Length: 438
Image (cartoon, rainbow, N blue to C red; front, side, top):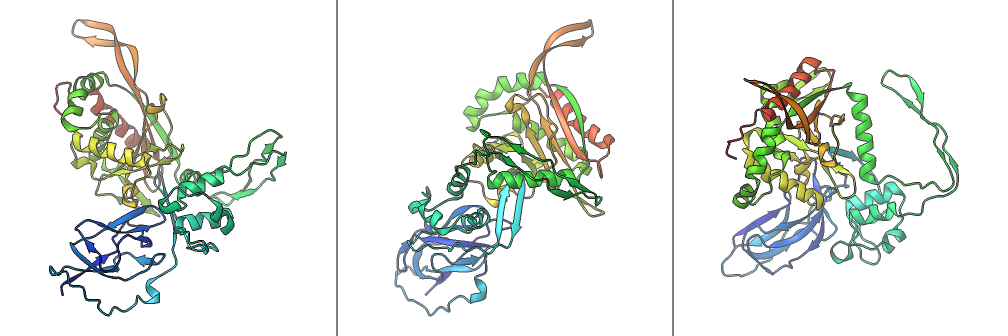
């Protein structure tokens, strides 16, 4: 009887295993192509696994709650047209195939991994299942099993999700009494010891504990500052033609392509062109080695409803036209806000752009997203009176201007390269063809 194996799929470069949350099909059930067979959870995302063939589920090789390595078979599906089901003798998975879950959390280009032993069980006495991510957060935050049991869950069948446990942590009652925090010491890269500032908390002050993602972002930002000597160059660009072009085409663009045309895809197109012109911006540093990246993968810093930040990545941005970039920007931004990004969506970035203008900011001095060596912030577009040079003399007119702020790692990017690069991005935006097609 012809059979195929349903394999635990690869869900990201840093994800080696997943936990089976729930089987949606029983042995002997008929399954259509692409029909969902089971639900799984990793430390980054929850996913549904569809069938890769039409047939009958012959054997489930793992139980709910088991941790399965990526690439391992998780079920056998018979493709026999007769529908006859034979249950073959299948050896149980070796114990070595089920290993301890590693803690992996993703943020705005942040991935932290550590081996953590948790006292929180996968399944409680009442039958509630807790994913590896929830268990690791509970361990780190000192949350007990009784607390988890009492915690309301918004996931499938009342399962506690990452957002549920983070909300619980944030809503813990804060201390209102005066607290004097003792100075702590930290060691800088040159070995010198410095005292952290003493923080005084008075009665009536509110103490808000950072959520997990905010802690990771904070650690990543401090690490970046310690790693890279930051320099920032600024350019003001006249983007009048670009603004007029977008205003002229955006309605027809949305009608024809089914996508809203924002400024972000336009900035990314110009950025990708400039990176091709200056490939030594598209690098990473490994000790005393410089890794020159072949692909141009542009991350776009995206604000989440929680106020935190994540950086989904547009891969090979230089190979996409404006329509393709727009579709990816809108898709990634939409899924980021809904918490639907996959691990691969936030991996592999080689350069990052942050649109601080979306918050009404004129400019910013962004922090490099390690292990990259540069990041661009684009400010708000504002109308200004400006001198316009014409063959008949200078005139005063109303133009659209914006600031570009380019932060770069001065270990490997000097002012000449950093300044020329941001100037080239501005040139592409200023020289926009008002008559161009998409």
